[in-house]
Length: 499
Image 1 (tube, rainbow, N blue to C red):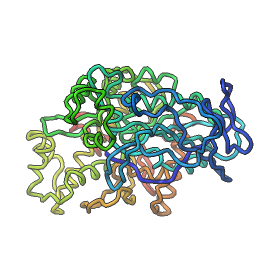
Image 2: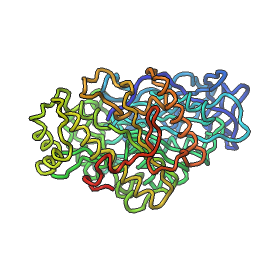
Image 3: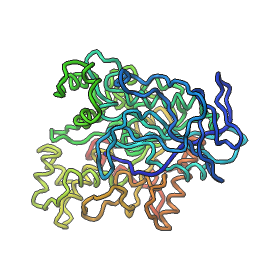
Image 4: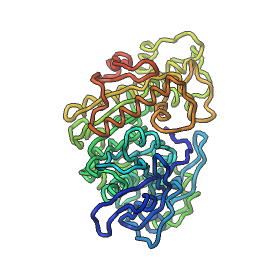
C-alpha cells in the first residue's frame, strides 16, 4: 500500500563517541564528524536537522543488486542541509516517481540543546508496499522536541532495485532489508554524536515499514541493533485475498521463487551483467513485480510470519497496532466505482473465493446505502489487517512484553491526493495515524491536535521505557475517545480464525 507525502525533512547530529576516527559534534552542533567524515546541518532554537547522510556506498554499477557496501570516507565538510533523495520508484497515489538509484542516505533530527545523558533513539522505516515512499516524507520535529528523543528516518532500495532476485546472485530478494540493517549499524556507530544512546534504539515503521520491523525481529543479523520495536499496520501475517479459497498473497516469498522470477524477465537480457547495465527507466517497467522480500536468504533466513508463530524472533518490548478501517483505502484502489448491492456477492466471491465469499456476505450484511464497497472494505480490514494484527500481538506476547493499540479516529483528512469518493468516508483508513505522529501539513481539529499530542507522548514513552502508558490489551485512539476496546469482537476475529 503506497504511503508517503512529500514533506521537507532533513536529519541531525550532536556530541561525541570514542571511535577511530571519533564521531563528534563541534561548536553549536551544526558540524558533526561521523565515522566517515564531517557533515554540516541546520540548527534552530528547538531542533537540529541533518539530511542526506550516506550510510552505504551508492548501489549502482557493480553494486546494483549487491548487499550494501561501506561508504568511502570524504574530506572536508559535507552539506547536510537537504533531505535524503527519493529512491527509484514509479509515480503512485499522486506522488511523483524517481529515477535516483543512488539513494542510500538517512536523515536525523535531534533536540537543539545538550542533554545530561544520551537520548533514546527512534529509527523510522517508511511504508509504501516495498515499491515506493521515502525517508524525506516524514517530518519528525514534533516527535523529537516533545519527547526529547533522536529520530532517524532511513531510505532503502525498493521494488526491482531492492527485492530483485536471480539464480546464483547472493542476497537475492532481500537487498532492501539488508539496507535497513546497514542504516541500523550506522546508528550504532554514530548516534552518540547526535546525542543519542545506541543501547536504547526503537525501530518503528508503518505498512511495509511495519512488515520490515517484522523482518528485523526475525533476522539473526539484526541482533543488538535495537532494543524495542513498533509495528504499525504491518502485521507479520499481512496478506491480501487472491480469490482462491482462503488464499492470500503475502508479503514474503521464497528466495528460489524470486530468483526464477528475475531469470524470467523479458527485458532483452540473457544474463545478469546485461541486466546490471540497463538504465533505471527500463527497470522501472517491471518495478511492481518485485514487492515481496525474500526469505531463505542471509539477512532473512526464515519467513517472518513463521518466525513470529514459532518463537524465532528477537525478544524485545513491542507495540503492535492498526487503524480501525484499514481496508477502505485498498478497496477504493481495486474498486474506484460504486459496487451495487446486487453485485456484492459476485465481488466477494471474486476476492475471497466462492465459498468464503458467500460466508462473508452473510457475516457483513449490506447497510442499504446502495454501494457495497464499505462492506467489502470492512471484510478486507478484518481479514488482511486487524485479525493478523491480533495474531501478531498474541504470538509475540507469548515471549515478550507486547502492547496494543487501534487508531480509530474516523474524521482524519485524506493524506493521499485524488482519491475517489467512498461510501461513509474513508474513516480511520490505512496510514491515517501518520499525520498525528509526523507533520504532514494537513489541518487537524483542536480535538485531533490533542489526540496527536497523546500519540506522540505514548510513542515517546514507549521509546524510553517500553510501555506506551495504558494497561488495556488494545487501546482505542480517537479524538475525545481514548480507552479500551474489544478488538477481537469488533473485527470478527472468531470468524477469521484469529482470537
